[in-house]
Amino acid sequence: MEIILLLLFILIVFLILLSLLFFNQKGYQKTEKKTKSFATFNAYLKEQEFNPDINTDNWDLHKSRLEKYRRSQYKGLTFFKSSEDKIYYLSEKGTKVYC
Image 1 (cartoon, helix red, strand yellow):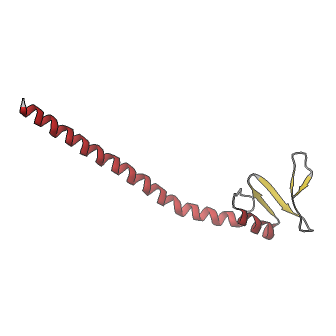
Image 2 (cartoon, one colour):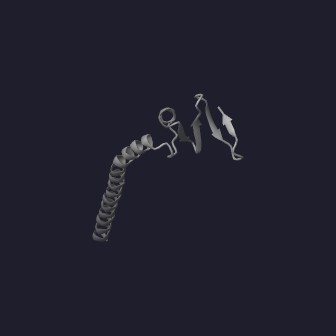
Image 3 (tube, one colour):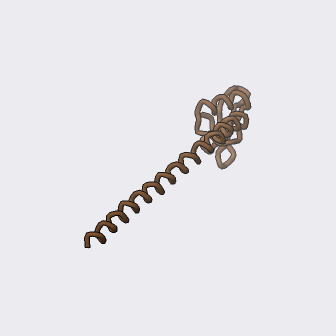
């Protein structure tokens, strides 16, 4: 009887160690994926800076693109800068809405 309990205890300890090892490797793989996408994220920011037609939530980037290209897409709306330096967007009906 004691031998069966000892074998059962060893089996339980082995399964716990095996599961800890498995979960630790899964966490490492998730961290590795995040670091790989970081370089892609930096390239995407550079692309956003030079393309005013890409949507952004960054207010400073939006303002600089308006100065440089006279148009910028911010939070789903395309804003334009007129010759009088007024900022506007086009409504669904096509009328200019000045900010």
